[in-house]
Amino acid sequence: MRVFPGLGILPFLKQITPFKHMKQVLLLALVVLAFGTAATAQKLFTRDARIQFDSDTPMEKIQAINKSGTAGLDTETGRMEWKVLIKGFVFEKALMQEHFNENYLESDKIPSATFKGELLNPKDVNFAKNGSYNVRAKGKMTIHGVEKVIEVPGTLVVENGKVRVNTNFKVACADFDIAIPGVVRDKVAKEIAVKVEAVLEPRSK
Image (cartoon, rainbow, N blue to C red; front, side):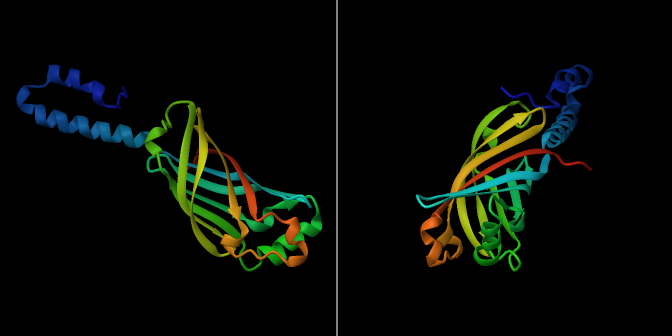
């Protein structure tokens, strides 16, 4: 059973306060409870989320990694926002990186990709207790200027006030109007595997 901050003062207040003032005591206890509950809510943040995507076909394997994604999470509401700059993705081959930015994602015109959504089961996560929690998030992902509602599974690992986020999902190029030229169509997967890893910490004031 969860013990809420502030409730521990009730027995003591009952002993020192006449019954006729009990309403005032209960009001005071509720104020203390509300303050204590609010104090546990935090906004967590990172500027170095790691986003990796893989395209795997019999013709070619392509991988790109971005280590400078930003993310924010409100532990009270479960609301979250993620953003990554497209030009931050690094490929093994410079030519792949050039084609990715100029032809596929058009990063000069559309410089970032975003996800804005929320945890579907925030109450299942105790952000005040170390542990691993399975979650699902739903929201609007915007890539290449195209917005699409997606739902993805993930894991939150709470450790000493920090939260490690891990998720794996797939993105279809066609869903975001990413055209693959016919000459390389067999070398690029229709669905791209995406892996996200990040450690979110309390936001400094």
